[in-house]
Length: 242
Image (cartoon, rainbow, N blue to C red; front, side, top):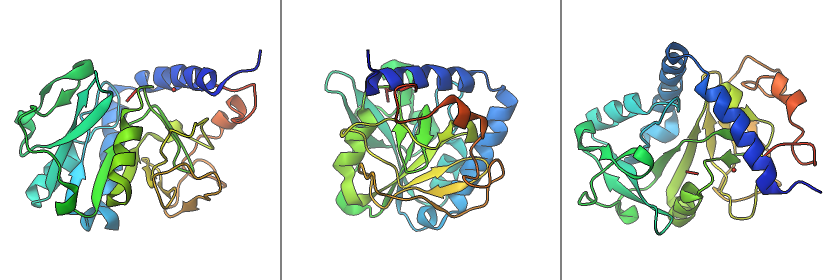
């Protein structure tokens, strides 16, 4: 029986989640700091009046440094609040980290009484997005719920979407469907990748490398051993909630 995109995502999610969970806390902390510094030093971040962050769960790349920098600079900071029943995300404002509380899926999020993001007041908006794996052309593999795909689609051109990832999470490509939304940038501890111009499925989009990496000369920032494990696009591969 031929493997479906859902099958490939499920397998890929399991493998990459296990790899991320196995990362030593010290390494995750060190890599997270480098990745966040890359975000803070980027032109698109410095020019944005608002940023949507996420509260890291487990070994996801942290956003605490970005939060502190944004608040000190007077940038408006928002965090997603999940409505599991509707399958949607609402971005609510946070003025200090203590305002975050445990919510859906045991992830820290703002109180439902917090100020909701008004896209007309903040342009552009930076949206930092977590994920299990990412592709060079902006593809993203989340937890499978499609929350961020719908959220990014709603923001449209007002948003610059940025995936924060460890370099082993960055692959040549990831199986996707027409409902998936690609990201504009992928940041790892070894490289900054300009992925696509719009957060939409764009099979013809090519990746432009804008910062030197160190693992592979053709695609810096990618561990070459993933190439032998995954041949995305055929029936031998693997495939993904947040």
